[in-house]
Amino acid sequence: MRQIRPAAAATLALATMGLGLLVIMFRNSGNFLVVDNREKSDAIVITQGDSLDAAYWMGLHLLTDGYGRELLLDARTDRIFFGRSQAEWAGDFVSKTAPSLPGQVKVCPITADTTAQEVYQVGNCLKGRLIRSVLLVVDDFHCRRSLAIFSRLLPQYRWSIAAVPDAARFGRHWWRKREWIRTALIEWQHILWWEMVDRWRYAPVVGPVQDTQSALTR
Image 1 (cartoon, rainbow, N blue to C red):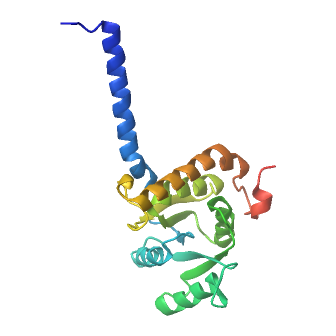
Image 2: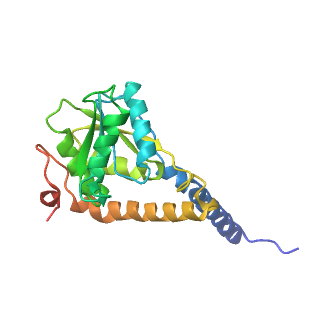
C-alpha cells in the first residue's frame, strides 16, 4: 500500500482547511451584511431605500416604544411622482399616519444619489438639535455599510442600527434565490468600493455640517 509522505499529507491538510474556511465564509457572507444593534437614542433616522414603507412603520413603532424622541424620514425632493415630489408625498403620509405624534415625525429632504452623500444631508437635518445619538432604520442587507459610513462621516453622534427585513430582495442564505444573489453581489461590490475608494474621498464632518460638494476630499 502506497504511503503518503508527511509533506504531501501536510499540504493536503492545509488545502482541506483552506477549502473549509472558504465554504464557511461563503455561507456566512450574508450574515455579515446584516447588523442590528438598536439602542435607545435621541433621534431615529429612516434612510432612503427600497423598503421605505416597511422602514417607516418600523421607525414609527420604535418611536412609540421609546427608542427616540423624534423620527426623521429621508425623502427625495428631485423625484417627481404624479406631479409631486417624494418628499411632498411623504409629508402628507406622515400627517395622516402619525397625527398623535405632532412635531415628532418629520421629513428630511434629500437629493443624494449615494449613501455617503446622504450622510451630509442627514447631518443638516440633525444640526441645531440636542442630539448625541441616532438610531438608523435601514434595509437589512445595507446595514453593515450604512453603519460604517454614518459612523465615519458624522463621528460626533453615537450610531446604532435597526435592520428592516425584505424577503423579496434578500435573505441570509443568499445563494438560494436569484434575486438574493443579485442583491448580495451588488452590496458586496458597494462595500468594497466604500472601503477602497469613497472612504478616502469623503471627509468626516467636524464642526458645522458641510454640503456634499465641499465635503469631497480634493
